[in-house]
Length: 131
Image 1 (tube, one colour):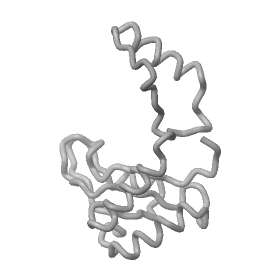
Image 2 (image 1 turned 45 degrees about the horizontal axis):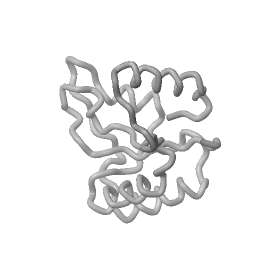
Image 3 (image 1 turned 90 degrees about the vertical axis):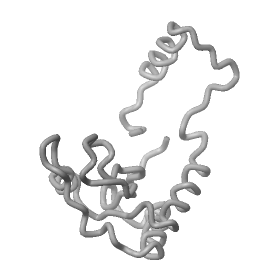
Image 4 (image 1 turned 120 degrees about the horizontal axis):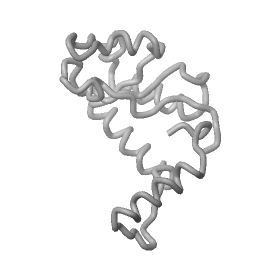
């Protein structure tokens, strides 16, 4: 999510819609940001397993390489970095060493997948903002 674009009215709207559907989460209402440390640990595990990579492509270049419904995507030139290099970069991303948008963490899935959202999707990005 983008904390700069989040508004309480959207959160309340989603909660209202879920209640309308008949769901009651009781005391079990959670937000992804409540679990940032666990999500970060999982991201590191994916990197160590060679299942995620840090990408330096611009947003425009990333979109262009993703392809479209009729054209398969093209792998990023940064996709084959070693797990060690990716882990180092990811930790430096978290430490704030890079400016907004300079790098993203992407899952290694399949750049020819028919669902465009499954073509090495972005999992983390740099955005220096409070959540």
